[in-house]
Every structure is written in structure tokens, then in C-alpha cells.
Image (cartoon, rainbow, N blue to C red):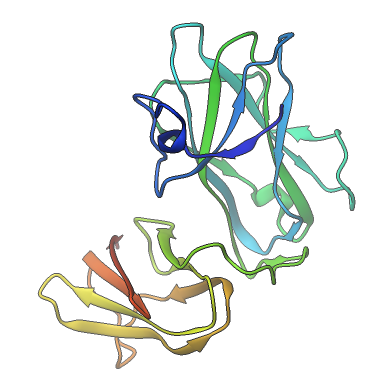
Length: 241
């Protein structure tokens, strides 16, 4: 078995001590019947711009049978192959709590790439991945990005903290009027980023740290709120100068 999209609260009985980093689902791979397992989670092909990074959260379900081992690699081949240029000199061990990993992809700026997370563990248990993103200023997705999203959802922004700009990701299960607004901690509207009908699917919007009058905002904590139909969600982000 390779990676599956897994909801530990939906098993019978629910798995104790394991929840997604955000939302209810994560990507997970399980110990092989004949270890070691050798599982790949591979991104769609993307063309990088500048300031490129790969970010995700990972954990081992438990350290009881040993920690899960993984490495991250990049392929510039036009098709999916097992030949990746590994960014890790050796396999890393994922602790038994959600841990953030950020990989610098700037050496691939201007190239079309795929990124892989390879898990190879000898009879451990469950390796978990959540909230994986590729950030690149001016980058584009080369694969089909028109598939509708499964849920309407506001994601976290990246980078966070940020200076001078950050990207907010959100998804719509169906075409809908949507608004995304930035507020300061006094509850005052700072900037309206989105206000109109969006198609179903995955979307991104960049906030450049300016208010409605195109003035730079000071350092501090800001709230961004998304409304779409009956859905509403608010998250925090930090501007650091």
C-alpha cells in the first residue's frame, strides 16, 4: 500500500492520539507486510518562478516501533520517474508530533519540477503528511488544475510571518460569491482582496501588505476572513518588518 488520504477519526474504532494537522484528513502510508516500505508522494508538475520553497508538516504516529524515515527529492523530468535528486543527504526521522519542514527550491528557479516525499521505514507504523505546499513567486502549475475542490475551505497563508507579501489559498466546492477581507486586531477593515463570484476549484490570492489606500501597513497581527455562502472562516497572520 502506498499513500492514502486518511481520516483517523472515521475508523472503527477511531484511532487514539492521531488527528490531522488541519481539517480532518491527511496523507498517510502504513508499514509494509514485508518491510521496508518504499512509498512516494509526488506533487503535480509546476514551473517555478523565484523565492521557491516546499513546505509540509509530517509526523510518525508513534515511536513505539521506531520513527518513520523519509527524504525529499526533486525531478525535472517531463514525466513521472523514480529518478529524483534528493535534497536530504540521508533519510530523516519524523518525530511523534506534527513538525514543519521547509525545503529551499531556489536552485530550481525557472524550471518545471515535481517534488516527492519518499518514506522508507523498516516495520514502523504510520507516516503522516499534511498541509503540503509549493511557494514560488510567479510560478505556475503545468498539470490540470481545473478539477473541482472537494470542500469549501480557507487555508493558511504562506509565508507566515511575512514581509512584504503573502499568499492565501482557498477552495470552493461549487461556484459561489466569495469575499476575503483583511482586518486589524481592532476589527477595522484593512483591505478587501476578493469580492465576487469565483468558479469551483482551488484558488490563491496575494496580499502585498497594503491597505485600501495602497499604504503599507505596520508590523503586527492581522486577521483574514473568508465568506462563501454559509461558510465563514477567520485565520491569523503576522506582518514582520
